[in-house]
Length: 301
Image (cartoon, rainbow, N blue to C red; front, side, top):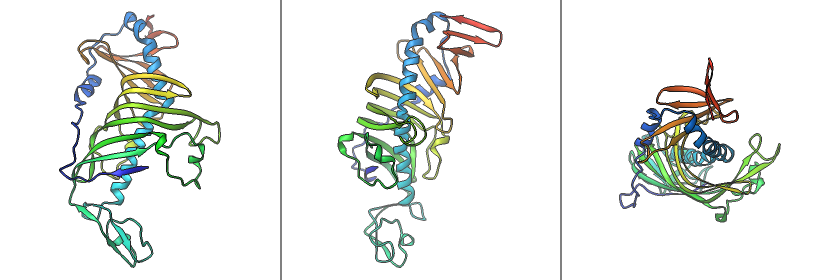
């Protein structure tokens, strides 16, 4: 759960927003012509990064925090688009419940709230990670997460009540479970996952409280350690996902100096994979160690 939603007060000490535009431009304009020599040197690294990202699904844990903030913003925004924090129903059927206006309090009033008209500013979100207790998937389990499970701390900007496209922060030894099949551990068990390190992401556009993040193409930059079933993997990687495409992943491969001077993209889409480089798109197979088009193998390594 999101345990702290800071105010939009101008005194909030907001760290600089990361500039992700060079990363986005690198995805759109790959500069490297990929051949056998490059793939021989980088195929194992690409495969390892993809496995760590796909197995741990760290992107899903981070986006879940943003979706929770969306819900809180929607619940605490009144009919005029103002953000209302700290309100509680006084009297009536919902006595003591949080509220944004009197309409949330049948037979009572919404009292004690602080209103931010058409809010613009920044919020800091502290999310206590769910940990490795499989009971968290039980509908009847209602226990606050233990701070020992680690946390994700994110900064977000607000523009007229919506979340700005760039979100950034850190994860501190965040522990979570990744179901092997389905949405819980019941069918096939769960893997124990973790992340410790830096986070920055671009949502592609400013996001309104009622917008479906699953449909967005989200670009991540992570630098830290992914843990998965007892194995730790260091990662310093940008990648893209769209949650609605459950098997889609695109990795930015940066091979030059300075950073982002020489790049290409390696993508996974369903059972397909391949390279998008300066010359276009070709199919590849890391398992078969070759790239190809409709005429056959172009090169191997």
